[in-house]
Length: 284
Length: 310
Image 1 (tube, rainbow over the protein chains, first blue to last red):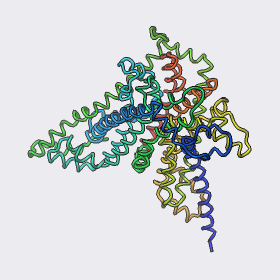
Image 2: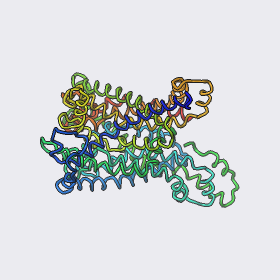
Image 3: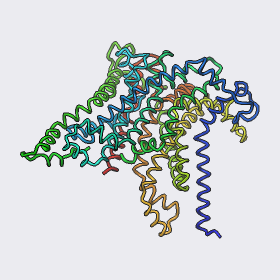
Image 4: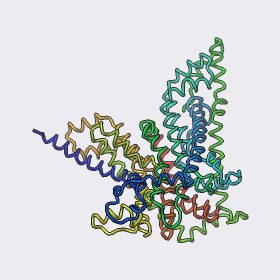
């Protein structure tokens, strides 16, 4: 027979699972609704009969075909890739060098730079986009995807540096002193000792860099106005919406596909993603 | 980040064997090397964060055509406009309500996930983060469609429960409600993940001894969990205050500040004035109104983090 203690535990669990189900419905309904809409025919989307929460009259891939054949979606996709890859590489190089210097080469001003890095991490993009708009203009980069190569690292490098300082700091100092005695240069030490040990941190930082760069919306919206230079986020929002009749099916197909790269990265590297996310708040 | 004094002390004696002499030379060059390796970072922060910040202050003191210096006139002008006060009010109400609800819901979900058997925790945690992983501008497009009044899901479900349909994005009250709801949807996972990490870091013995003392679940929450997580709860909320006040994507995609400017926040209003209407100085001035709140939050975050790592 069940003891009162066990009954209480069962009731608690029941309440917990009930709440979890509610939260999951809340969290996952929007992507579900986007997906289901993208597979419906236009007639079904416009019809007011039946249950809208499922595909009732046979799914269609027409919205996806149209997306590739009739819109600039693939162009935006290429531009996003073109921007994201160099941004990630550049940001990682800057972050690794700075994190190594700040965690190991104690020099005058290192503490100050460390604090500055943290404060810059807290600067949101909507604070400085207007002066950056002027600066980009003065550099002749307005309406060019090159402008994003310049501004995205400001949003990425501070967090990545900070994250990597944490990983580098966990490497015992005896290790680099031994390497120095053996005549290793700082470059050798960084490549042979620090990078291999900090691989989980490097992966977390890379995922972060990729996600920020891929998801950026305000900067491309402010700096880029012609279609052939536009990236996926801003391109999907501004140019897939045409006229007064919204093509919901096509719009949702585009939005969903554009979401896919960061979501896939997350699905496959979830543990790194989460360790990077929580490192910021709990380790400090 | 403390300078490694010990290594230098060991190497300091004057008579050194060859290997140690080399070590000494290398240690000598440390500061130069350090500055050198930090140079890209310093250039980046200096050129694209610090300089733009001071440039923004300068810009905000120019006239519309940027031909004359007019001091604080842009700020004075904004203060006389009803629209500006509405933007400020929306920004503060939005931030306050969104951060509060994200904290409450995030904490509840973290507690609930922490309570169920460990096997399932990974799955729930993984699924919960999906809203946070999707690019916000794109998931906002999804919400835009959800809020569509006649053909979409939300009103259909309301009518299923016998509730009258709502004009989600075309009525000022419901439009504010809608943008805040999307922000809560997007941000709750982040709160959950940090609070869950915090819950995992509480020593289990504390709960075991309270069990022996016969403490109820609520008492444990009140006297163990909350005090232990006080710092993490505060830092996460302050951090989120900054990000939430700076909201741009959701409002831009869902309402563009409408109806009748009722959902504009500092970021979107600055965009409207500075980029869309071409009054760069006035836009810069609107953005700068965010700065005091950001600075105060940043100060307390820094203090909280220093305290927790001591």
